Image 1: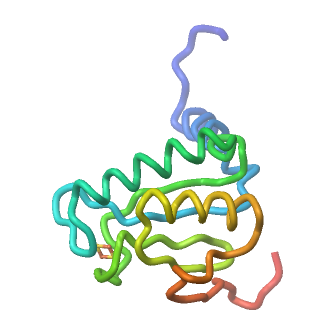
Image 2: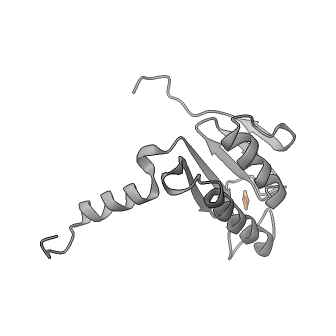
Length: 131
Ligand code: FES
C-alpha cells in the first residue's frame, strides 16, 4: 500500500470480493424486520435471520462459499412467514424457522433439491435474453 486512502471504487470492489459476489451461485432473501414485522413476530424473524447467517457460515456457504444472503424488511407476502426466496431458481418458502432453514440449506442449497413441503411459489427471473 502506498498510504493513500482508498477511493470509493476500490472500497466497493473490496466489499464485493469479501461478500463473494463473483463466485455466488445462489442468493437467499429472508424477511426479518425488527421494527415492523408482519408475517412473523420480530423475535422469531430475527432468530431465523441469525440462524440462516450462522448456518450458512457453518456449512462453508457464506462469503466465498457461493451463497449470498440478504435480510429484507418485507417480501410482500406478509402471511405464514418468515418468508424466504432463493434465486436464481425463484423458489419461495413459508415458515422459515430454524428447522426449515436447516432443511433449505442442506437439501436445496447444498443438495440442489427444493424442500417441497414449504415451497409456496416458483418463478425464476429471466428476460429470455443472453448474457
Ligand atoms: S413481513 Fe414477511 S413478507 Fe411481508
